[in-house]
Structures are given as structure tokens and as C-alpha cells.
Length: 296
Image (cartoon, rainbow, N blue to C red; front, side, top):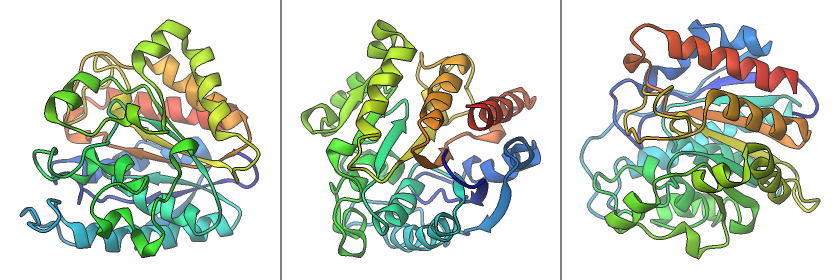
């Protein structure tokens, strides 16, 4: 990433999911040495409001008001790091933290999004069986869904469709069967796992980066849901699917993104340390992130 060093923000919100372990992701990664691996400053923690397990009847979402308020608080914290010339590395939590980070960027200009995720996260509430915003975050960020989250602070879409690349998704059949709206019918660029396999990871990420390094953009944000990784190497997620990127492929994608000099920050989500019983996965994750983010 261009300019200054890294600053880690802890964002242990599971308001868009459920409290069964993902909320401990920041403690686990920092305990395993991530800040040292990145030579990063620890920039504080944004605590979420209490989790409400009842689905809101008006929006079909879990915790809509809490998610809105948390997005604003996280945007303030992420914005402070950006304004100080550092690059935020935001540790979720679930994928709904995307909203706060993109709100921070939207307040400052026009930015792209490299969205690395095994799922498209493009559900609408009526198709999402549990009302989890972590299955809707990209739809919400592009202005689709209940206004409480799809129109934060009256800003509408936090990122434009044409400024987004969804990379590595492999849930198309599952999402269509559930009645999810189709990301393929929008202006979002989709480079799914099958395309990555057809093109090879180097060409695929090159194509993805062309979308987010365009001169009209002020930079781009990187979203990393750990379920973009192959289930064979990353079983420590709550919604598992076969297939995915290898460790080497994820490291290559991140290194290429950072080498552009246009990435302004990164978020990491969904890893559940409670499912990593021997600690092998978290040690590998820290080592891979350290190499990709510091050696590009």
C-alpha cells in the first residue's frame, strides 16, 4: 500500500451474523502476532452494541439500528487512521464491517473495492433465511436493501457497481436456489472461482486490478473473507463450501493488489478461532498476511 505504515483497528462485530466465535478474531490474530508481522500500530477497538437475536419485522434484518450505529462509529475510527496517513487493517467480526469502512472512504472521495469472498454477499432480506447482514453486505454497500443500511447518512451507494470486483465467489448455485438477487445482472465485475481456474490466478487478479486502479478512483479497499480460501485449508468458518483459493493464491492476489500502490486499507472477516483447535490455521494466516502485505 502506498504511503505510511499500517494501523490495526479491532472491529469484533457479529451484528450481521451470530456470536459463536467470530467476535474473537481480533484477539486471536493479535495474540498470534499479526501486529508484529505487519509492523503495525494498534489503533484501538470499536466495540459493537449488544446483539439482538430477534429479526426486525420492518426490515427483515438482525440488528438494523445497531449495524447502522456501528457503521458510523467504525467509519470514524477508520477515517481517523486514513487522515493520519496510515493504512487501516480492520479485523472483524463479520462481513457487515464493510459498511463502516466504505462509509469512511465515501466521506473522502471515490474508491474502488476488491472483494475477496467465497460468497457474493448479495442477498436481499426476504431471501436471506436468518436476516444476516453478513450475507447482504455487498448489496447494501452498493445501495440495495433497507434504507437504514443501504442509505447510510443519506449517501446512497457507498461504492459504485462499476468500481467493484467480486473475486473468487463460488456460491452462485446456492444463492440462486435460495432466491438471491443476481450480482451477475449488475455492473459489478464478477471473477468467480471457475474463472480464476480458467485464467490462472495471475491473469485473473490482473484483470480484477484493472477495474480498481482506474485514474478516476482515489484508491481501493480490500475485503478479505477467510471463506475465499479452500475449505481444505480454511475449515474455521461457519458457512463452509468445498473449493476455494489456495494459500499461495491468496497471498499472490494480496501481494499484487498491494504492489499497485493504490490500496488504501484492508479488512479481514469471518475466521472463527473457536474452530481452529490446534492453532495451525491462525499461524498460517498471520504468516501469509505478513508476507503479502509487507513484501509486495
